[in-house]
Amino acid sequence: MLLGSATVLSLAAAAFAWFRPVAVEAPNWQTIVVSDSLEFDQPGSMLAISPTGENILFRKSIQNSPIWLKRADRLEAAAIPGTERGATPAFSPDGQWIAFTADRQLKKVRLDGGASMVLADSAASQEYGLAWLDDNTIVYPSPSGSELRRVSAAGGGYTATFADTALRGFGLLNVTALPGARGVLTAVCTSNCATSTMSVIDLKTSKLTRLLPDVMKAWYLPSGNLLYVRTDFTAMVAPFDLDKLTITGPATAVLDGTTIHALFRTVPMLAISRSGTLLFARGKAGNANSEFVRVDRQGTATRIDTSWSGVFNSFALSADGRRVAVGTGTTGGGLSVYLKQLDAGAFSRLSFGGQDRRPAWSPDGKTVAFIRDSLNGGGVYGIAADGSGGERRLAKIDRPIQEVIWSNDGQWLVLRTDNGTAGAGDLVGVRTSGDSTPVPLVASKFTEMHPALSPDGRWLAYISDESGANEIYVRPFPATNGGRWQVSNGGGMSPVWSPDSKELYFIGGTGQLIAAELRTTTAFEVVQLQTLFDVTGYNLDLFHQSFAVAPDGKSFLFARQRSSGVGSARPTVILVRNWFTDLAARLKR
Image (cartoon, rainbow, N blue to C red; front, side, top):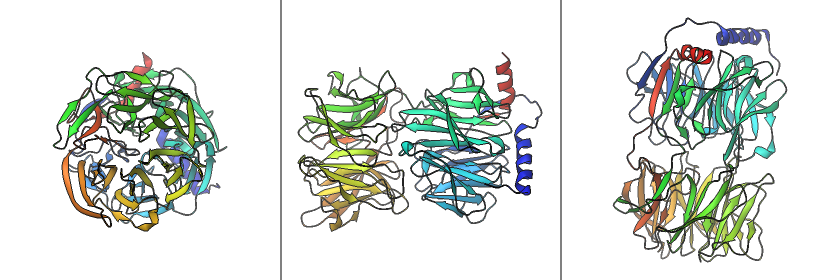
């Protein structure tokens, strides 16, 4: 990319802004209330702060939330017009603009008003992140996460500055800028973010260098250090050579061991301004142990086994309701599938592949299927629930697989492909015997997730963002082109069928469990929607099913944080002005 004289001058000015000395003032720590409805646990949840530290960006827990702006000199925050469903904002170096992603597009808008402007299509969204560089270009990951793209803030076509197809699915995320457009810091995420490595991309050579394992996100500081948050939710600082793009010394713990809240154990809610104002959320650890509870239709929760808890990445309930398969981490840093007898039975390891996740029971309860990630794309494997006979591969396609379910007759597996590329996030069917050629079920330019087959085998429910927000849809199965019906209105996720196929449960856009009463004798019809109870405080997975229905249809299986439970305290937001003074004193010790 050629730089004109004006750009060179702007780079010089920007570099001065990064490194110029500032007056030494005592740090000021304070707990603040950005908003009573600040969003912490949804895709796109974030905190951002302007270069001067005077303006804060956040989202609210409302459907299709815009990005909200809280100015230091204003009592109330204001929504930024044109940023509906916006996420991952980045301030321009002068603090007058923000870039953000919304509806699969990269956009920008002035803080003082005006229409938003589309800069690029097919942009990654939610937790991937982007950075506005000092040369007035913006870098952002491709939807697949395998490519870093660069576009002028004035608009025009993008250029690919880095690409690695091995990173498809989750790859580059949490991108932040280095001064002078020297490069970017990024996390390299693999195995559905079971691992995350802090890395740097040299924008001069397009080379990626891995720096530190087990790091979610990093920021460059004017002092010549990197501030980063590890996967154990602690913040560290290490010296960094900006010319060689290398870490040059040991790390130091900062923030007195405070736990940083992280969205999906992947995106830490922390922001730092060039002027030294630090903003972060603490108090709700993303890796807290969880427990399983039964919840009746009135919302009353009953603990299942008070002696058992863990960090559960996913789970599936057997058809008879007597066993639960869970995906959880291993001591070696991998993922495996375990089985738990309900209520107070044994908890035992079932798979040993290293990166095994998102289990699914066969309808007869004899086999557990799961997704195995590997460098060659992985696939769906199955193993007998009693551990006998070894494992076997059930399905493999030419794209990464993110979800798998069985049909009730055992003749089909429905797979959800990765949602990283345009037209991905599709649903395909694979027969369990005979011809195993993948059959497209729902394939579009939008993202489809959370497949759920009715027990009577007639209907496929799923979510799609075709309207701009996730909604619940139903199609006939397996002839999915025979119709399409929208079930939710105002947002929906995690569709789950009742055992008799007469109700479809889902989590609505306002955080309520909804029961859709259905009439399907001749065609598909939604008779009514009934709100059952609030699901606030339960563990919700935006990329996979979040609950299960008991065989009698009278209760639901949810996971929740053991230490707090439903209605637990929300993370606390801390604002630290002149934090660089505190950091300098700490590094001298």
